[in-house]
Amino acid sequence: MKQAVAISGLHKTYRNGMEALKGIDLTVSEGDFFALLGPNGAGKSTAIGIISSLVRKTAGSVHLFGHDLDREPGLVKSLLGVVPQEFNFNMFEPVVEIIVNQAGFYGIPRREAYARAAQVLNLLGLWDKRKGMARELSGGMKRRLMIARALIHKPRLLILDEPTAGVDIEIRHATWEFIREINRQGTTIILTTHYLEEAESLCRNIAIIDHGKIIEHAPMSELLQRVNKETFVLYTHGDLDRLRDIPDCDVRRLDDSTLEVDIDRNQNMNGMFARLQRCGIEVLSLRNKSNRLEQLFLDLLAHKPR
Ligand code: ADP
Image (tube, rainbow, N blue to C red; front, side, top):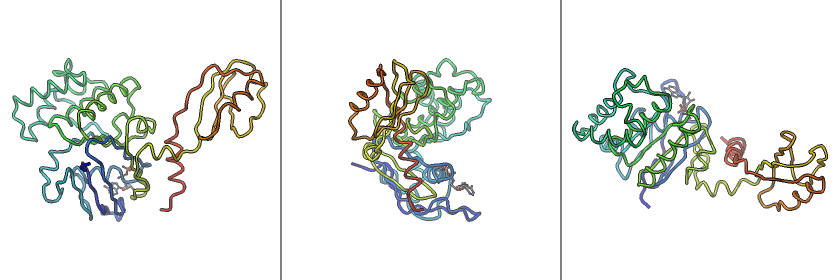
């Protein structure tokens, strides 16, 4: 498969001597939905800044779709859309103008730009707001405006830096549905997020960066295979005061009818159910508390040499 991103030996030392990236190698395949994760200060924004020509690298190379950032910076920029964390549009400009003016930076004629703006604003549910000033939009709408603007030149790679930070659940889901659809249509997506469940459910491949180094770079499914404990929430009927220790299970009581239990991935759950039944406790339903990636993330950060 062709590579959307190929980064080799990427190094960045800031003027104050801070070594933000210490020789990073990273590849992202065309069409991928890729997660770049790491704790605060790990180097994610620096890496994204270099890919999008906002930060000057100290050493190494960056290729997008086979084009060298150093040799063809204009072309590389045209292949890329970035949605940064902060709202950085003019709050006093009408929504549609923000999009159309952005198109101007890519040499898209105004008539074509208005047609495209109509398309993306409709897709993102902002068409009704097109004439209002950006500052009149709600937080979720501002976030969608950022995405609309990043898509106006039809980039082949879209980088989203914490796109749903502080966005409520409904809008988060709608945003993800939209990004998923863009990905289905062929746009490669790189996502940084603090919501690890989000990365787990959306992304096919993942890299974890810590202290300026890539400490993991693998398919999501392979990483999740390595998590050997899973946590389940059990909704029960019966008197939980009668609960006794269950061998090989770490059971915690959350309230009068809810338990949380850690179970080894290869462990049969029948024994646990039988034990609970013997205590007069029936399990009405259960759900997986999908924090597997979080657990893995913490394990990796704790155990990897730096
Ligand atoms: P992340 O996005 O993963 O939180 P950053 O790339 O923002 O990490 O930062 C990596 C490291 O580089 C941090 O220690 C940060 O303080 C430092 N850093 C980031 N930007 C600058 C800058 N402009 N000047 C000096 N140091 C910086």
